[in-house]
Amino acid sequence: MAAAPTPLTGTKVAFLLTRGVEQVELTNPRSALEQAGATTVLVSPSKDTLQAMEGDWTHADTFPVDVPVAQASADDYDALILPGGTLNADSLRTNDEAVALVKAFFDADKTVASICHGPWILAEAGVAKGRRLTSYASTKVDLENAGAHWVDEEVVVDGNLITSRNPGDLEAFNAAIREALA
Image 1 (cartoon, one colour):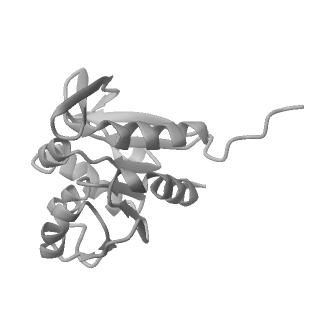
Image 2: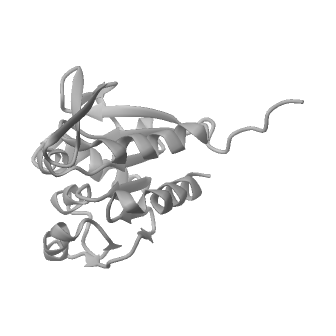
């Protein structure tokens, strides 16, 4: 008897991140997507490898970069995941190539999912305006100033955008991503 096909077989998902990414916000959604059959790709302005963190002060594992952000195209992926981590999110929102990639996913109306501090880049890319979303509480004012309607909920789905607040919301975040891509 053949194994049942996984629901996301053939789906390719980019994770946009750099040094300082909150490890669990990378590894947990990545594992959930891979278990559902998706292929995941780490896209980064970092060279070769990047250092993940547990919180803002504790080094965690390092991860190899699959594709430099300068070579990444929204056309190559079905979805984009933006993990948090204060250092990661702050660095990405000042990187023109990362901001352009995020905007390209929105221009193509592809699924974009972001957790914790990850939504900061949405403000920089000009795609938060008019969107209902959530994030880590400390980014609320920045997102509201960018025109977003910020709410304090476990997971928020607004069209192609999925957002969550923190690692405690990962189960709901992962379920919303899988549902959007199924």
